[in-house]
Image (cartoon, rainbow, N blue to C red; front, side, top):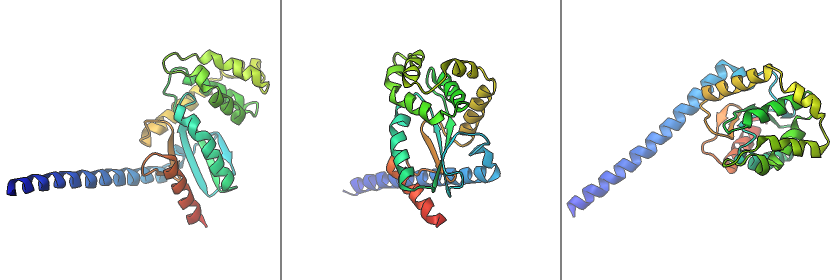
Length: 217
């Protein structure tokens, strides 16, 4: 019996040590991330990054995303609803982290669409048609042109020309470097006023945004 109790005690001690260690790692990451954000705000919100929402909103919701990421597409509408439920209080800053085949082409299209004032419209076309062009087993990024043409919202000739702008590659490289510096390896990666989510999930995102809005008031 004593031996059994010792074994149980050892198991409990190991579990407690893992829980405490995991909490400390998360706390240290959050603290180091806050220090990094304080040192260089441009790492989080660089000049010229695409933004949705009020420019003077008290809450900056920074999202590193990949146009071919299924979870990014799934979170897009709930995040829009969260912004609509809190008018003028959330600024969504979109950063690129292209991880899938063909994603760099989509980023180039999105950046080129900004010159026509159609960034959000183009992003929504991409997410709606994502299953048709972004299959991870058989990606067909060229198919996006079918859906862009069907929308009738863009000058496609101009879009193709503007995609060759060399600054687009610089924007991608900057965002990828910033994601690495901030410890973001997967998409979507969220930071709320520079704070990472305690764990991934929309409820966690909503709770942190709500908390930051309350703190600003």
